[in-house]
Amino acid sequence: MKRIAVLTSGGDSPGMNAAIRSTVRAATFNDVECIGVMRGYEGLIDGEYVPMDRSSVGGIIHKGGTILKTARSERFKTEEGRAAALAKMKEAGIEGLVVIGGDGSFHGAKLLDAAGMPTIGVPGTIDTDIAGTDTTIGFDTAVNTALDAVMKLRDTASSHDRLFIVEVMGRNAGFLALEVAVATGAEYVIVPELPVSIGKLCEMLREAHARKKNHIIIILAEGVMTANEMKDRLQDTGGYEARVTVLGYIQRGGGPTSYDTILASRMGAYATESLLIGKRGVMVGSVSGRMVLSDLERSWTERKSLNPELLDLMGKLN
Ligand code: F6P
Image (tube, rainbow, N blue to C red):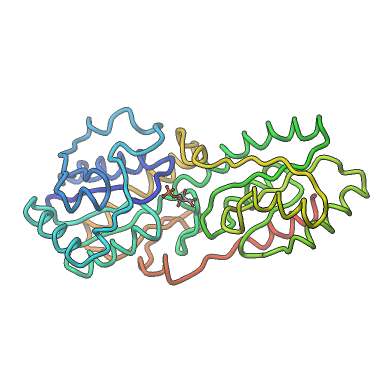
C-alpha cells in the first residue's frame, strides 16, 4: 500500500485526535501517505480529502474533539452512498482505510471492506459498549469528567441532605454509569442491564434513611429512563423529592486523560501497521493490556457484559 486514509465517525470521544496522530505518523514512518477524510462517511462520499503529514498532526495529541470532524451519515447506510464513497476513494488512489468510531461506524466499515476497500476499525466511544476490547478511546476521560462533576454535587447534596439523580450517557449500556458510581462512591447505580423497579428503589431509599443516610446520589444510565422521569416517578410512588443533573455532552468533551492518550496512540499505530501487513475487516482492541484484532462484526453481534465484581461492590459499599 502506498496511500491510506483515516476518518472519525459517530459521536466524538476524547482521544480521537491522538488516534489520528498515531495513524498518520505510523503511516509516514512506514513510507505510506495518509489522507484525512473530513466529517466521517459524509466526507468520504463527497471526496473531502485532506493530505496529511507528520506536521499536520502536530500539537493535537491532548486536544478534545476531532480535527477531522465527525458525523452520523444516513447516506452511507445506502448502497448508492457506499458505492459513491468507494468510487471517490479509488479516484484518489486510496488503498486502505482506518475508521475511528463506535459500533455504528464499524457496520459501515465492514460493508466497505466487503465491497473491496481494506478497512480496519479503531474503537472510539465514551460508551465502551464494544465487544472485542476491554475499553475504548474516550471512556476513561468521560468517567473522570463525570467524577469531577459528581464530587461537586456531593458537596451540595450533603450540605442540604438532598437526594440527587445524576443522568450519565452510555446509550443502551451501563458501563459509564457503573464506573462513575463506583468512582464517586454513589449510593446507587441504575443501569439497563439490571433493571430496578421504582417500588424497589423507594424501598432502598427508605432503608437508607432508616440508617441515617440523608444525602443520596443515584447514578442513572440514560438508557434506562431520563432523570426527570425518574424524579417524577420517585415523587409519585414514594413521595421523594429529588434534584436532577443531566451531565450530557460535557462527558464527550475535553482533552483525554493519559490513559486514553496512550490507548489511542497504541491503537492508531497498531491499526495502520495491521492494515499494511494485509489485515482487514477487523477492529483493534485492547485485551488484558495487549493489542489484538477481532472481526468488526463482533462489535454489533456480541453484547459486552458489565463487570460483575463492580456490580457486587456497589451493593456492598453504599
Ligand atoms: O455514543 C456516544 C454518545 O455520546 C452516547 O452516549 C449518546 O447516547 C449519544 O452519543 C448521543 O448522540 P448524538 O451526538 O447523536 O446526540
